[in-house]
Amino acid sequence: MFSTAIRFIDYGQQAIQAARYIGQGFMVTLDHMNRLPITIQYPYEKLIPSERFRGRIHFEFDKCIACEVCVRVCPINLPVVDWKLRKIMRKKQLKSYSIDFGICIFCGNCVEYCPTNCLSMTEEYELSTYDRHELNYDQIALGRLPIPVTEDSTVETISNLSSLSKGVMEGHSDRRNITDTN
Image 1 (cartoon, rainbow, N blue to C red):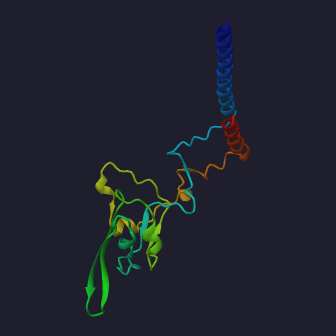
Image 2 (image 1 turned 45 degrees about the horizontal axis):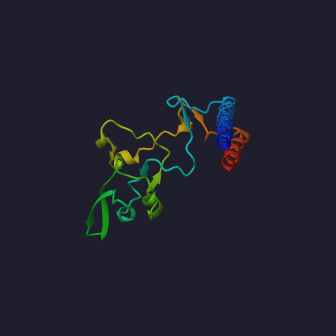
Image 3 (image 1 turned 90 degrees about the horizontal axis):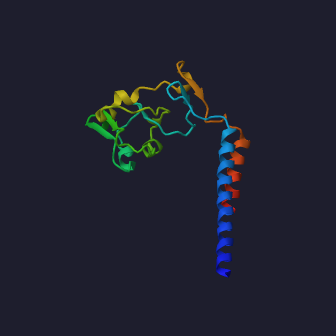
């Protein structure tokens, strides 16, 4: 008789626990229904990349001294630097420079360690193509400066999802901490 009563009490406690979990789920759902959508309509709206965003690499042919520091610091030895030695001036002359962005990991080491600052990161992030060979950029393609998102008249720019109010984000993180402690 006591075992039946204990089972009945355990069943009741489990039912109450299940109802609490369902109630918590409904509260999260209701909380999200009161928020504004943060979806960006991508081709027509674009986020402005942050100041330290590592996009496509820009190369300035005239500044390069063919020292190959970029090749030595690259974790995958990616930049291809072709040069010839000018014996009269005892100086290297750069013939060609290329980077395959299909392999590049955008670590930024080449930009950071370049002694002449001929390499820089741009805010261009739309590098997708149908043919992987189109991602191999030579010095001409690397020298092309992209149109900044802020200057593109066909696109509405949105700066870093700052449209969310701080109260919404703080409330969300606080609620997560409360449910984790229960």
